[in-house]
Length: 431
Image 1: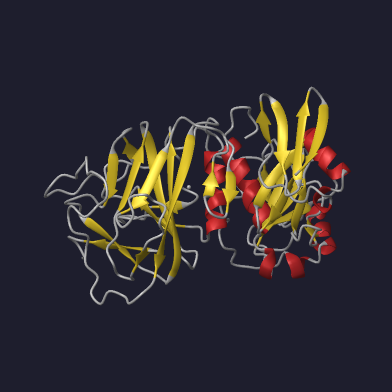
Image 2: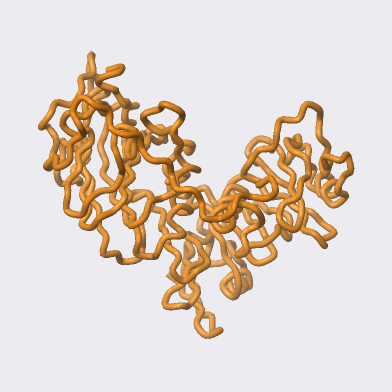
């Protein structure tokens, strides 16, 4: 974890061009597509970025980054406890745009802030993301009023990787890239943390902030191109009720019978918990939010118009489902690649590869979620072939990324193999 110290004041797809993302234990998130864009990141104790140097708690640290092309750069640190910091962009820098071939050092000489290692002892990972376009990270990190550094909403390397994989999806396949540097925290803590001294950075400081004046705040993230939701979107919590709301209850006092039946079928008191919103219109149907019970996480009941049944979506599947809807249509309706929930969510026991997870079935596809790999969508012939082989219980195991395209053909990668489709012909390959 990087502890931010202020010197002066207080001394984060369905199209062929969609961008793929691979989540890995060591590299956090990588683009499996070969890109011309490249980014390098390193710390002041190791110019190579490979040595995993050790810092003490409270010790000053400087981070350098360089791209080979003009790009927007984002820097995250994940500490041994999974706490995530985003220290660039910040409100002391004018922009997170980095000129190709220029080394940027954080903090720069004369900067009005410092970076100190905050601990705990253990292994830290520092992730640099370079993108040809600005990224909308509002679901990952936000700047509160008058705040110099962003508040990160996610915790843990895998959660950060999953969130970022959604953010980069709209980009061209070769429009982003990443690099990771590691450092350890250990040894005797620094008794009195000091700020980094000018000139101690590895690399050349080519851009310096203005002297005696505070740089302009970071511009607000770009607004989505989609129109604002006409109806309350599932990602926006409803006002806290002053009285107990019943399953399927609308603001008019009427109740949606399909939701009432679903709550009873799913033993809602054990899996859904108390309703936190009324059943309100969403797209061409209804949704109602629930607090969730224990490990199930937050939940919603979804009821598509014309259907006699409603279904629940929980936790990691719900998070991904709503994120896809937000990326695709501003969360005014379900994502088209999945559609409405069309079956009850299922817990999948440990398969032959030692992985367990969740399965959600939708009108146009499915979501498979595991703590090990993340939550990914499948549809069409790929999904049919996969489920025909036994799905996650087959030799393929769980998906390890979203379905994607190669030269116009659909493909999907799994724990134990790969599925490829071309001109209606589907082929399965074992690892």
